[in-house]
Image (cartoon, rainbow, N blue to C red; front, side, top):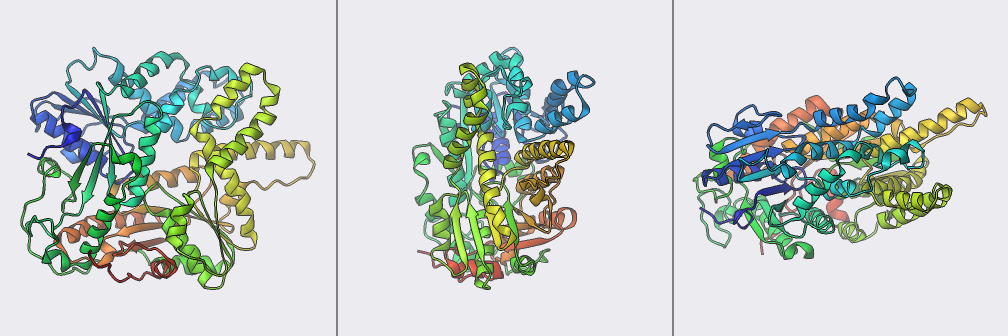
Length: 608
């Protein structure tokens, strides 16, 4: 049995965290099985909104502790985030129904409709698991799939007296709504946060892929958690291509002939090894384990037991299989965008799905056609510079610096609303402005300034605000419109939200991967946006193996596993769907980005 550092001398609590699609649930389930089969008593808890723990084990779990009959000593519990959020909202809104005007109740419900509320409500559900020793005494280990982010824990550390602050109208539009129900549980939350920060009781496991973008995301999470006291973290790099192109082809460190038979396989493996060689500084000191990509889906005990071990089943080298991949090439979307003559194009999606690269490809393709384009992003400038690797006529590039925008926004709020407060009120307001939602709003306001250019040119935006932020800003815009209507002064206000809601002015594109969790997360974002009156114009499924025509059995099996996800998006979600193949070579530089936008596969990189 392979020795894994993140499971060695495992403490009572293990949290598995990471971006969608990196394999958190599979790693957590396989770890739970291994600990239970070592004769420990284990409880596996999922707070993932896209949880498929029950599917993995082939049993119905839900919101009750359910023994997994096939694994003695293992039980599982799925906390439904939406159900928890609904119950949490009702505890806050229920007492004021009938006491406040319907419009005010609706505004409170909107404030409680976003991601912050769901995160806090989920944390509220499993707090007892961290603090109630009597309730959890039967378990040697409790494993959590989808740990609370540093974002959530930072919210829980904010001051507790927000209800009066909200009632007096001195709070700003940030996370105050979700926080308003926490006062009575501050001591319990403090105990829970203390348990998370104690390495003798808790181990946080960062799950990532061997890709530059997901490793950078993991490094940001690591820094965010370390800043609030969670210093001892482990890293698991999941889904690494093995040195052989197919199971059983050999186990040497040199790439065998079988890998060379599939140029895509060889190029991707070389890229992964390069990403690992350039791992972000913050992750270098973390104890690290590496898990190879498997050919099968992680469903059933046999698959889970094999996940944490090298795959040894033999398979012959197969020829490429012609797969009917739904959707169109990216160039079809660019053609439609060009036909509009101008407008705002916003790419939204979770971290690590390739939004920056796709935004650059769309912008470069439009500019190459002689159209004026402004590409703007909140991604670190070096990343965008590296992606473009040069300039292009008709293309303007800018970066919105979140730190600069936060500082300016904070100063503006303190100068206006803060001027009406005493010293204590100012201190509370400044503390609130340190919450993560402030960044969303500050950056959105910067986006709004840039978006005005879309009246005469194309503006392509990478890293858009969440639907939660849009709802809060829409509530503010609605207030101003209502005041204007009542005053009857004839002034027409056009808010940023109104531009986003107008499909003639804005095209919102959701970016995802052809895997279960990223697709579910993108679907949730679509629902969130539609509640804000914004209908996504198109979806892009990025890095599709099925669209890349692989030949190695390992990649062919992975490609087949993508097809149900692609069909679901095409039939149920996307009015327009573009599928971008997994590329043998990173799309860096103007020629490569133009090839990406045109749907061409660049020449494979040679294996060094």
